[in-house]
Image 1 (cartoon, rainbow, N blue to C red):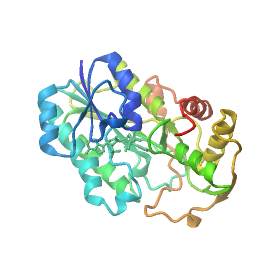
Image 2 (image 1 turned 30 degrees about the vertical axis):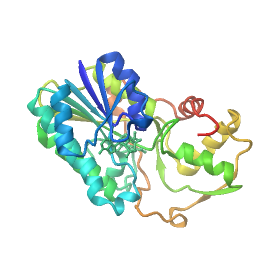
Image 3 (image 1 turned 135 degrees about the vertical axis):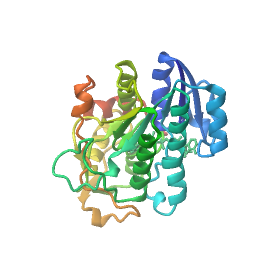
Image 4 (image 1 turned 90 degrees about the vertical axis):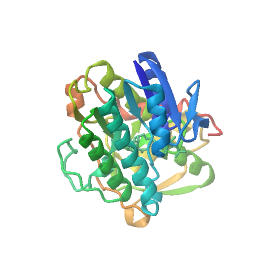
Length: 303
Ligand SMILES: NC(=O)c1ccc[n+]([C@@H]2O[C@H](COP(=O)([O-])OP(=O)(O)OC[C@H]3O[C@@H](n4cnc5c(N)ncnc54)[C@H](OP(=O)(O)O)[C@@H]3O)[C@@H](O)[C@H]2O)c1
């Protein structure tokens, strides 16, 4: 199988590369390939229609795994055009190429397509109502894929972290080293998801026939087990950081409301995803605490 891994230098892309390499011949691409762990990562601006088309026509993948995205949630508020180019137009073009060329597509979306007003975990069939530009652009990407008529799976996930890249775990470790006291939002709930576990869910999609055999799009929610607030997530990171010798001590940390930490993008208060559908297909969410520990063992002190 010929696989195109788009976004190979991102958190998820780096975790996908070794797993996909065991499944087929992988072509890795990213706009900034420097931080990719692929043996060779092509520098391609996949948002550029010509560059994308050339890449696809040259490598003719049987499967596109699209981990490329515009993920700067706050910046997207002022950068709407680029967010929609990368999160809507680019996957739309990939999906239409896939439909024309007998190729399948695996794509990722987000809990931020929901408004967070639910009183139970979100199911795949719940009505999206994004609160911010990032969520709007990701929802538009889902629709472009659904409209393309290709064979696709969309995995919606939440609060992704890894040992490298831009994420909450590394931000908290950095802040903990420089600030004696931190104020952390305690009234937004979600399920932090280790990028490696999302990569394993992707491997399951490929190996267990979750991609449709006929044109159509299967949507699944995958996030790791155990819902927490950002404050509770940070507490786990500090405790684990001390345990692993990444921190001398945990900083004093204080729970605050969202109002006390104004950000450009509005976030949903509750973005827990119901993962029963993927569980029914044999993939079970991995536990939060063990995943954080395993991930943080891969962090070096200067990260
Ligand atoms: N991170 C989260 O908390 C989170 C939560 C829910 C869902 N998701 C979804 O999960 C998926 C994986 O996210 P992630 O955290 O792995 O994201 P990430 O670390 O930001 O990786 C995305 C990669 O795509 C690259 N990219 C952006 N624009 C590109 C372009 N025009 N051409 C080629 N490459 C481009 C990025 O490069 P640059 O970094 O140089 O821009 C980056 O290497 C995404 O679909 C995301 O929307 C993420």
